[in-house]
Each structure stands twice: as C-alpha cells, then as structure tokens.
Length: 147
Image (cartoon, rainbow, N blue to C red; front, side, top):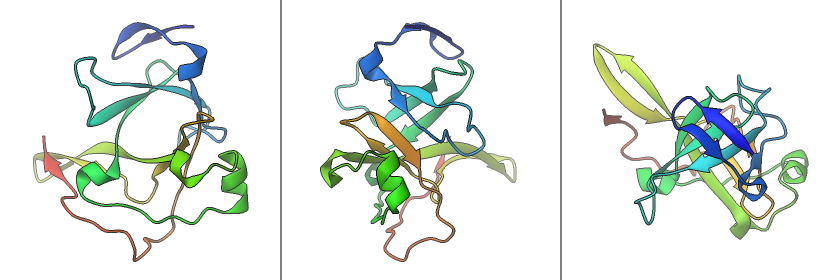
C-alpha cells in the first residue's frame, strides 16, 4: 500500500510491515494501523518513527527504554493479553514514546514513562499500557536529554 506521509513523503508499506493497535493510542484512538521507520544507514537503530497509516500527518518517535537506562516489569491483564494475542514474553517489544517539552525557554526530549507501547513482534499487534501509578520496579536514569 502507498501512504503519503508528512515526514517521509510517499512510502510503499508491505502488509507484513503493518502493526495494528486495536484500541489506537491515547488521544489518537482512531489511528489503528502503523508501520516502523528508521534511518536506512543504521544497522541497529536507536530510535524509530511509528508512522500512522490511517493519518499520514501522525507520527511518533519511539525508543527502546533500555537505551535510556531503564526497564519495565509489567503485569498484563487478561484483556491486554488477549489484545496482544497471548504472546510469549520474548515476542513482546516494550517501547517508549518520546515527546518534546519546553520549560524555562529550554527544549528537552523526554519519554512517556506512564504509557509504554507493547508490541507483539510475531503477530504485529500492539497496545499502549497506561499505568495509573509507577511500579516501584521501574529503574530510571537519564530521563531527559537536551535537543
């Protein structure tokens, strides 16, 4: 399928590269189909762009939380397991959405700690797990970096 994106122009996306988020993402519930894009010259990319296939103007930078110095231990509800098609733990990638914030005239890029993305890489389906409170087992360091 061809998608005309805001950031990357026209892209050809094969069906096996589509990741479906059955419930969408927080505040973007209508966008359910995405693909991952990264720099072609990077053998192991540090960040990815999660590009919506339903809204070509919608894209998010995402990163593996371990690249930022922290990790999660997450318990999934039965509903979350069903949405992810009951994956084996090694088939689930946990990713952080990054956002830009400005404070005191300074710009910083920060991860959204309370709502990681969980993607079943085998089934190509994902959810955004919104946590009401942070679990004490979340290890944090280097939370923001200057732009």
